[in-house]
Length: 161
Image (tube, rainbow, N blue to C red):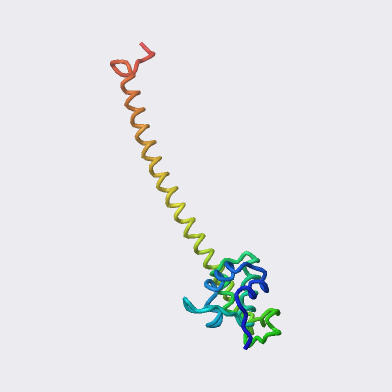
């Protein structure tokens, strides 16, 4: 089987070798053992690895976050890609429903996260509001005391004599 050195693979993908190394770590679960080797081993990329990384690049270019790209790559079928197929996109998932379900799950997670953030902000605002109510009550009490001290001795004056 044909394998490619990192510099060759990086050139095929149009990225730097440091980006390729980072992607090999980020997307290693989708690569061959030689594409994501143990420390100290030489890295070699198979045509299938190149196809996976090309798809990851397209997903990243579409502004997907790394965890989302990993989720989407799990849905793709890269099968047995030969040398001449490495430049082509992988076959789409057999079940479009699986991709839809995964996308809904990803978006649902983002909604839950946003709701949690909103709930935390709301709790902070409610605590600030409670503090302000205490402050208003204290100021109203002070104002009432000030008014009481300001009254002339003998209470209210009567206009009718």
